[in-house]
Image 1 (cartoon, rainbow, N blue to C red):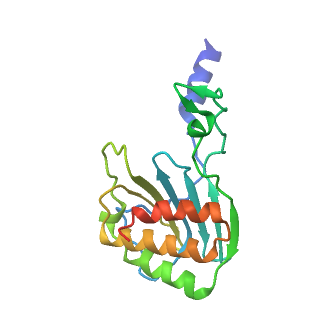
Image 2 (image 1 turned 30 degrees about the vertical axis):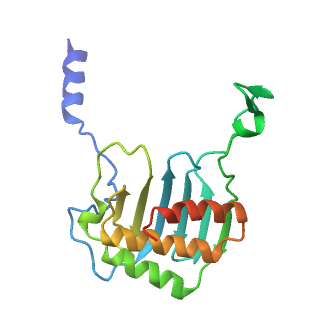
Length: 193
């Protein structure tokens, strides 16, 4: 009985303590107008093509371009199927050549100005089913600790169009691969150019 009573007092007397967690600023909290982007990720997710990601580090002044998922070619079909040759049936997806590139201050400043123009509407989640076309996700980490995530679908806001086009232009100027260029041309089709 004494053990049960002591156990009861010990359980009641102990309070759970948690280590303080760093709070990330969300869209519902005001952001500092002097805040600058530290990191931007931008994912192109087209239907029937490879999904790619662009990572821009504003502090270290570089860009990374890579495929999100590993490229796994489909196995070759038999030589002739339903009258079609195996060449007609092979995987037509473009292979992504990942690369990194240093960025100039002017290139970073152009992207940072567009990011500063993004408003709550530009970060709203767009629900719907998009079978054809391209969708994109982007995330921004600011110097004040705010982290925002946005989604772009077929109907882009003006600011989203500016960001999409600026990222594409940056990829065109830094890319050295012909395979990547063909993929970028596919992306450009959806930018309204």
